[in-house]
Length: 429
Image (cartoon, rainbow, N blue to C red; front, side, top):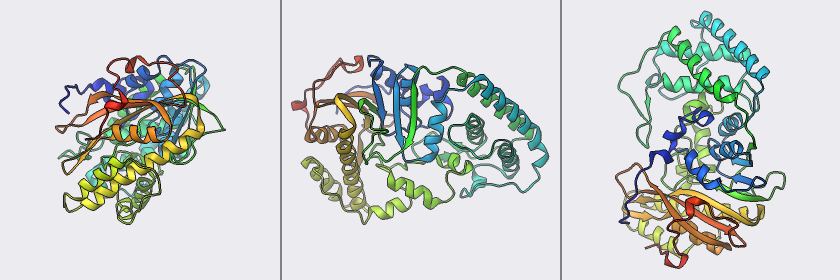
């Protein structure tokens, strides 16, 4: 592309880790709190925001922090659980009850570390934690279950479980320094006192931010973004979201250890099923189903057909599979945008944070293909702006694709004011 764009770590999850509730649980694909703030900074207080790809509920939480109302959607029950926990207000009496229960759990778990407590069916679990550490983690988990029950939605006790999720990762050998999860060479051993100290430190940090009340109201709901997306027939004035990128990364790659330990996931097949439901997801059974997938009869851009053909004609071993993957991604995104229209106010503004990708040297310009779909579906004021260069040697960038439904944009976010491209200047190749 020839453009000079910085990586802007402040527009990534790294910045989120330092910001209150946003830092409760690390998720590398989570998009930037700062970016969402810049997008919504001029939104009127009576606006209703939608995020159809909620993830860790960054949009909902930022909207609520700014006194706005928001609905967030996801297909993953674990993300719905943690998203609602992040966006919920907690009373002092609730937090006091939680602290009392945690203190009891920390006293009791030491006596059951030698018991045969439940462990998740994670493949090669001793690659993550040594047997000694696992016995302690399993005992603490059982003690929390005895006190609070299993993790459930809309409960102050979710905070104790979020702290436990952080604990299992911070005591594991997992390394998040690459798009594919890797492991450190050495599996660390932790003693009871260390586990107790780390857990209590994590919980204290969570409680500090949980005690601050949110001015707005955001909720996360179980709903497929490819279906009609309104909750309670609300008409949304703004859509601020970041859907998965077409990069063939598992939708729940980093979530799996959390989901196993909280019993939101029990088998590898369930993980594959979630990936198959997700736009752009492919892992396990999702990959095998993709081989037999045929597209729906939707009006996809002609340039997509050319792009898919280029990927297939590379002759690489998995060229057909990858061609189908790209085709399905934009097919699903088209269905999402098509159904989204029914839930939008006239003049609603869309802001989609997306990334481009490359397959066997064939560039997939996600932002431009989505612009073509938006245009064919009747959206106006369509364009995109580069946000940052992604952390890769390849020419991969993050963009904000924007559009308006049915009329001229009501306002201009400061994020878009500079270098707005003209629609007629956009071309795929």
